[in-house]
Length: 350
Ligand SMILES: Nc1ncnc2c1ncn2[C@@H]1O[C@H](COP(=O)(O)OP(=O)(O)OP(=O)(O)O)[C@@H](O)[C@H]1O
Ligand SMILES: [Mg+2]
Image (cartoon, rainbow, N blue to C red; front, side, top):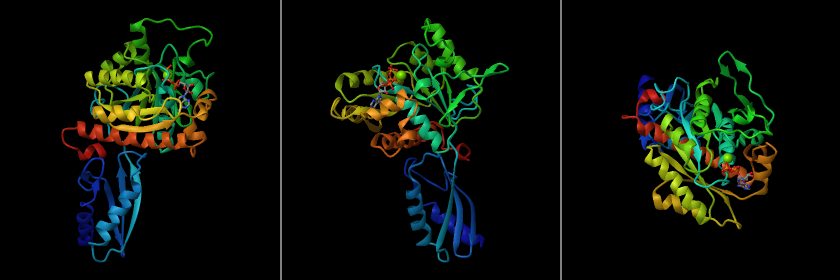
């Protein structure tokens, strides 16, 4: 029996994780192997619950084991997931967050908040623990997009309790200010507001902290990138050239600050703004193209009425695009976190 087990393990060690380019056994992704009659039962621990590759693993594991281990005719695979912990965060922030992903752009109004919201909801639907910080302190849009514009966080001791919508924990100055009055703040106050959203909120353990930034390369993205160990940044652009050249500046800023660019999202693609600018930028600069979201009035309505399209109309082209985007972002985050570790450490996944 033991012998069969080691034969199955040996066979599985020929299965390569396509994103990480390492075999699933040395990555410690195969757990709890048991042989029952002619069936090998085991669990595959993925690096994100939002993994698009399950069918690939099933196919490859079957090929590897059934064809090469006499006596095994069936696989019974269970799934589990554990998002790696970003080593940069460990020890630097006294908060249990595994990864921090900023959503940024060069130009305003390209759809950062829409992308941040739908991304967060899709990751939560996949089973991840997700938080969303609205770092657009002066013009917060997340409360409305989440459908909780009148929400007020409760306070527990020293900490604020985040609000929750669509399975995502949220904090925003929109929950704290009078909607009729403008917030007036200088750079240092913006900085401390963002800092408080990390430190003084009772987030609990999070797999992904998504941060929705204000547009451009101003104070907020700069101080965020300098003060917090970001796993990476997603740059949102519209397809047209003026937006793309701003996106380039936005992405270059993060690179200059040693924050990995997880990739480029092209939003509002279609007849009006054209198509392809975001993908071209990604290809030319060697950044990942994370996907294209079509211009669709339903996306806007979803934002206005607090019903993110990825949850509310998941089968529309835009709903599907956001879903696929979330899987790509999660995969890229895993790759960046595991590459940043000196050796791919089993304990990161294990
Ligand atoms: N794919 C889309 N199709 C149609 N409308 C969209 C799409 N994406 C975003 N919108 C709409 O465009 C407007 C701007 O989007 P959003 O507020 O997300 O942009 P932003 O980049 O966060 O803006 P700001 O720079 O002001 O923070 C919103 O009304 C939003 O609903
Ligand atoms: Mg915004």
